[in-house]
Length: 285
Length: 277
Image 1 (cartoon, each protein chain N blue to C red):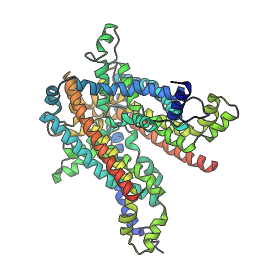
Image 2: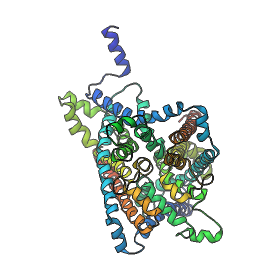
Image 3: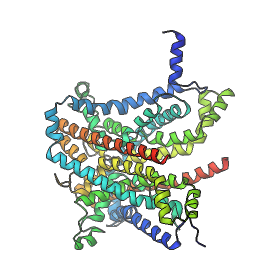
Image 4: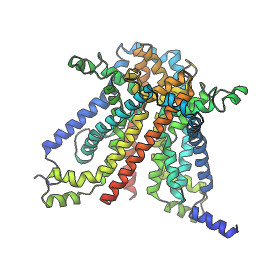
């Protein structure tokens, strides 16, 4: 290869710039990324690939594991839906209306990002256990929250809310008034305008928020294990099952469950991405 | 007069009320519960719980872990943001997605991968045992898991900010003869300092509060590998609820400080931005 063609290849890979430091910063970030993230993550897949199908199925697809996946993915989806509805409402209220204490409310939405998950877990359990602050009023009505899938969903609603609000908020704020005015001029009711004009514009952001909250919910551990009760087959989430396997020194089992979880998560996130791309295409936004 | 592009005030009030009620139940009440349960038995037991030797050693370890992992990810975050926002190269979006990977992995799996690598029966485990090095069930393992978990925070905060700012100012500085380091210190850093500070705050909050990943690699040795969130779990499982909530309230205090700092920074951001343009 001649020097000029090598230089041409370099140019194609990276456009020339007068700014210095590309080699240093790019090398540093790629090296650090490889060392801390890529190599460790690869061990999961290498380990499951080396384990043999029968062994993989024995734990990774056992009845107990299947029940755990159903629970984790089901509660994460339920919590994601609750958050899609209420997160949109919160974002709407914060962007469109004015009310006293708005700034504080806007700040507190980020609480689940900042509050350690174990703290959230014991706090929610203190609220929703049968003798808890809220639970004591629900218990006589026959509603059990703590130590049931409802409790897990409550914890995941807490964890996922800011993802939806923070995804929808900027899009809602950037949405120009002109299209809504046009819709109103043409005689649309407010509800029609929302359904036909506003919702299609914010739907991709809403879906992103849902996907982020869902992905976080599937893997969530700290806030769930206190409120869930951890009964195998009933309220045992998949991440907890991984920990249980690890405590029994069954590394193969833990890896198999982790692999199934990650593959299903990636598949769902990919599907949501495809839906979103199709939506973007349709609405041309 | 009612404007046609907004809702009636009555409907607004109903929607605001529903939103606030939802936030009160799901966000405010848990926060109040932490402090309420911590101070249930009065201030004395609270103080006893947070000054117990095990609690103090957990606080010390948590501070140490954050003091190691936050600077590491600060350097990485700035370097990655510089490479990504100031240059055009192929595979950039792949690099950005890879930086986000730790966000999409369960904390428990984040701990598991380091056990698979460095644990007793892990890949590097036998070699480590031979050389009398301990990573899993020791402080280095907790640091590794924490660095992994908090990996994207600083970069995530800086990339959109620096993307928006472009590179005109840096190019001007370079063409006027400034060195790369001078350009970064005097041109880039003043522009990104608030975003950087916020990224560091978030990174720090997560580093101090991480539970799942740390729980897998720590081994829960009291006084040695017990961080504050793990100590909360131990006390809670021993039915020492006042103790658990007392330590938890310190972490909740950290979360509140982070949120307040964020709000103040955002306010300064806007002020800064509008003053410049």
